[in-house]
Structure formats: C-alpha cells, structure tokens
Image (cartoon, rainbow, N blue to C red; front, side):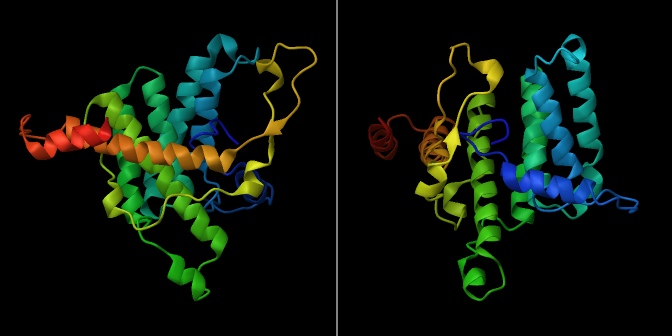
Length: 252
C-alpha cells in the first residue's frame, strides 16, 4: 500500500494498473488521461510526499526543492481536474494537504484538505450506493472504492480538526455508508518492511498485513474523535450542563 497502511490513501494495485494504462498507451490527447484510480494531480502529490521522506542519494541533497516542485505541479492540475473530479483528484488533494502540514505550511495544507472535504460532497460519496449495485448500475468494486475514499477523507478531517483546533467538517451523521467492513482475505495479504527500513539480518519474514482491520478500527477511532472534538470546541458551551457532563462521562 502506497505511503500509509492505516489510512489506506490509495489502492496500490489499481493505481499501478491505471498508471500503466494512462501513461503507457502513447496517447496523443492534449490533456493527460485519468481515471478514478489515477490522475496527474494524484501522481504528483504522491511523488511530492514520498520525496519528503526519501533517502535516495539521487535527491537527498535537494529533496525539499524537488518535493515542493512536485507539489506545485500537482496544484497546477487542480483547476482542470476540479471541474470534473474523480476519486483520484480527492485523494491527491488530501496528500497535498499533508505535504503542506509536513513542510511547515499548516495554513495552506488546511485549505487544500478543505477543498477535498467539499469535493466529497461534489462526488456524492456520502450517499449509500448499495441500491445502484443491486440494480447493476454500479459495480461492487466501484462502490467499495467510493466508500473507502469517503472514510479516508473522514479520518483525515478528524486529524486536521485535532491539529488546528477546529470543529470537524465531515460529520458521521451526514454519511449514509456503513463503516468499512473487515475483509479477512485482504487481511491475509503479506506485509514486510522495505529493505532500507529493516536492520535485522536475516530480515523478518512477511506477516499478514491486516490492512482492512487496521482501516476499520482507524475509522472507529475517528468516530470517537469526532465526538470529542465537537464537545471540546462547541460554541457557547455550558460546562455545567447535564447533557455535556453525561457526554463527557460516556467519552471517558
């Protein structure tokens, strides 16, 4: 999984497949092709954030400038992709937001993440699409990708709320889809550290990745965090209110 397993930024298999399709076909189109799993904005955002953590000797001496240049390229795609966004566009915007916070530009990172949260509604991700799957209008894979992206944004919204000390923008009560379920088969897919991240000799054997379980419980934690944030940052809060005291007791 690209970058972080616990919040499931991108489906790596789908991203790599569509990357090969979009960039390997020799298209003569004036604008780069894109899909729900791949777009130039997402591609450059991924590279930008990855460069921030890279120790590759080819870029390590200038990785900040390279990372910023890639982020700027991703941002330049916003107006073109934003008119007809895909899931990849939303994912890319969240990554641009994380690049901003990681490079000491909290304000601009918060803004780009906020655009992604608004785009969530543009794409209708808060709607339960089960009926469209039953009618054959939407595939189960597409529905699953939509719901995963929805809850990726939901988790990021809660992290940003805690980071900047503001109320959440995306509330659980406004979202129809259920929390992501646990897929035991997906959990069994192996995980092992990257070669440069492991100092033991011999390196540890691959272990089950527990990808869907990790994401499921991260989302459940985000629901709890939403309740905490809306309590802590409530306007005109009455500290002696029985309702508030009961809520704090439940959270504790």
